[in-house]
Image (cartoon, rainbow, N blue to C red; front, side, top):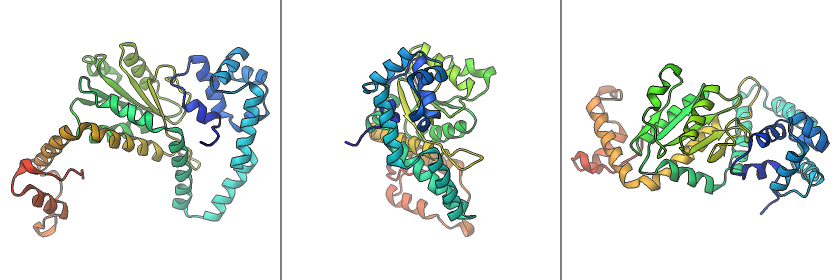
Length: 317
């Protein structure tokens, strides 16, 4: 197994205390510059005690602050990503790409996906899938702003797979109505990105208070929910100036759906069949020119052998 850097080690922690969350946030914001800090300066700038710094480093497997400095400096050399190196690298990428903005975005996206893959171990994805397919409870999904669109995407596809999937909206005036039936058998999937929706944070903390597991998907290891989340999943969101990317978050959500599928196979097959019947009943999609039958519909017809209940095709449109 290759050497684990500081952020790799942090991603393996189950939970962070409030003080550890502040310290991890400092490391994330100033990762490579930390190589030039002292334990006193880290303590002062992060707002935690030197004892907290020492305890976290020990928990992460470092022999001391000097050991951490050696690790970060080695990582800088390995990645060739000192601040000036990153600046030059970005300028070179943009100069080479010229006005090919798609190429620039793809380049950043690939880096995001590689980092996301490295920071999410299969056990975390599988454990999250097990929680979200538990037969007793319901699955609640929530996100604010751009995270809300991603939550809506996950909600729509999860509805194909299991009963009792609920999308929480950001209407504070109705949140009590939305949560009135929640019990500790339920699970919350919380999607949030820096700078973190205060509304989403309050709802997640309420789920935790009543004993519900909270699965957190974020673009930072240190968040206001790091101390309560049962499972923390990471999606890197770095992008070109103006907007951060949400591609990695979408990939993690799709991976969660894939992990849920084998656990719900029989129930899912029935639900897909019902969805297909309803598509026909409600004429959901536009007709093809001249009344032609779309290729997907012809494929479904072949599998049904003339009957609705035997559908075997289960891909969504």
